[in-house]
Amino acid sequence: MASAALPAWSPIMVVLVVALAVGVRLPPRCRAEFTVVVPDTSAAALVDAPQTGFSDRARTDPAEQRAVKEVMAATGNGWAWGIPDVCRGRWHGIECVPDRHDVYHVVSLAFGALSDDTAFPACDAAAATLSPAVLALPHLRSLFFYRCFTGNPQPIAGLLGRLGPAFRSLVLRQNGHVGPIPAELGNLKALRVLDLHGNQLTSAIPATLQSLSHLQMLDLSYNRLAGPVPQFKFQRLSILDLSHNALQGPVPASLGQCRSLLKIDLSQNGLAGTIPDTLGDLSQLMLLDLSHNALSGPIPAALSRLSSLRSLILSDNRMQFTTVPGGFFSGLKALTTLVLSGMGLAGTIPESIGELSELRVLLLDSNQFTGVIPATFRRLERASELRVDGNRLVGPIPFGKEMMWRLGKKLRVGGNEGLCYDTKQEGLEGVLALAGVADCDSVRSRTTQHLVWINGTVGGRPGAVATSAASGSRDPVAARVGSCLVLVSLHLACVASYPAALRLAPGRGLLLVLGLPVVKSLLGRRRRLTITGVVVGEESSRLLPSHRLTAGR
Image (cartoon, rainbow, N blue to C red; front, side, top):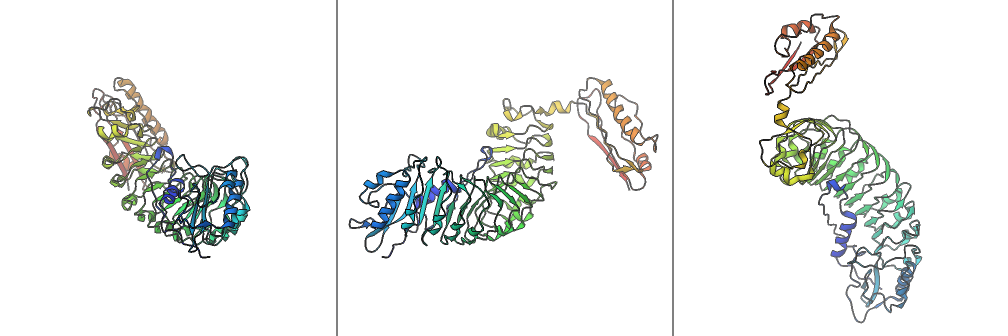
């Protein structure tokens, strides 16, 4: 008997697959909108309609009807024995298609209540099993089990690898499955969707899965898988989610050959090494999440070619580079989520980030960024969360009151001792982001004196760094004492070679910066000495410009 083909599009299946397996799982603080539609002609596993092409004359194939009832009984749905015709019963969880002889064939089965609106037959989680009768459904294309075996943990049955050549979608989500992924699943040559999310699977990802050349979605997230990420080269793969496992080794460079990828999520593993340049070849990629691994080295400049990228999440890795390339973000115009938290990034924050007009979530917290917050950040009009806390930033916060009120609790700038806000802006009272942040007027009124000597060696002797900061211009004696301590520290470092190196100039607590001729005579032999002094009058509340002198040959 000939079997009729499935319809070219199954909308409900697409919606549910997107909701269950494609949606981006970000931490609550960086949740972002992300929708992927995967047109899949095999998408029958979750369709809510019982039949396609219903005919009064059509009847279910008797052998398939018996097999369906056995499968249902094994899940705890013994009531199925009372159904006269499983395809004509119009119950959710089964889809059938007729052939030209008006004989119905079962093409999809789904078990487990997703919600009140999608009431597939429930499972008896304490006793449910997978019946071998499923092999008696030669036209089966999709099989879906959701939370069906949680009270009776069991391995994934290897017999599933013997399903017919039409089988295309296997979804076993949050069932409590234990043990390894059966190598037999590599025999399902027509498989498009393999979703084993949220189980307790262990061991390595079997190499046999690399033979699934038609695979479009692979979700093995939230398990206990170990070993390396296989060298996948799936030309049709759109979704790859291996997050929340114990995978180790490098990110495979071969992923750059999976040119149809829309989403890569390898977060929460133990991956090491560098990010391969080949990922920059994925022109359709919309999400890249490599966070919470042990990756090192620079972010490849090749990633700036990902013009379709909407979410880039690299937080909590062991990156060793000192700064983000300034022009890196110029090609990422579609970016809506950028998370670079806890990476040890140093240097100044690239101004080009402020040119990302679509950006909603920007997390740069817990790094070592210095300098000021770029003024271009004022242009991030669509931002709903912005964090730069826990860095070494200085200067005034550039955001206007409208932006600060709009962001509310989602704006975090604390942990930067040098940041301040302008009290001349009205309406900032009660802005939570400014809690603990000084106003710029009070910062300007502080008496701060710094003397820094930066050099590896001077005259063969180790260099020194001396800093003094005396707050409160009300005590001129303390200011003079602080200055003297700094000068004494520097003097002790070089007194043997240069006994008259430093002198404190007379005057009301002023720190006198050494003259260039004296410094040149001290250095010699191409040494370099940098002395920075902040000159502040005792009676003035205005911070005078910093005087910086650099000498050397």
